[in-house]
Image (cartoon, rainbow, N blue to C red):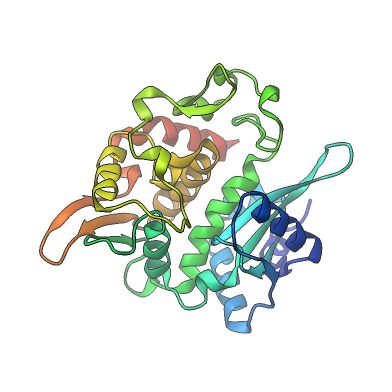
Length: 300
């Protein structure tokens, strides 16, 4: 097994093969962003290593043998992506994370979280959506990167596990909802082999939420989506978009808020009014089933 220090130090410019692959995926999905490899400056590398070094050792141990590396790029069209590497026999060799330098170059933790959380919504909005994932001196770029890496590491830990369907296999390869311990907490596999929310977890705006989108939803949709979210088991709005990001957000926010004791506040305000305030999902009774899942996962 690889030592934990190797995980912290395993990074560099994105390999050409990975850049080409992501470019092809963006083209297929009609994403205009064109990725390229990037060399991270020394201060960026220091922040990333600080972010990694302060992730709980039990979490880093889970990545041992699963994370091949964190690679730097520009032009991803998002803050980061994770994908799996398999050999010609379909055996999983590990996962790679590709991190976009531009998303973090000049943003603190709260600035990055606020920027990312606003991407599904119109920039002409009269309301302001504000997010806090750090207090006081913790509001640093390193802590922005830490939260994002925790999300991506959630995807890394999904690969080859049995609590969610395997995302790169065709729909007909999926089993039944009850066969996946995490999936069944908020999602179901319908007759057409689509993964859809359970009826009690769905809400009107959910299907129109796209992060890093060019066309955003309006004020009314922002407010109603966040109000509806408070009646679901999704730890964040991002989590409501699909089952795989639900797990990644569940993992990231659990480590962030429960294990590290950091905030996860959302406010929707105007110049003279507060329309919504939301504390961490993990302070709500709604978090019970997912808290039990995370405790069992970490114990294993």
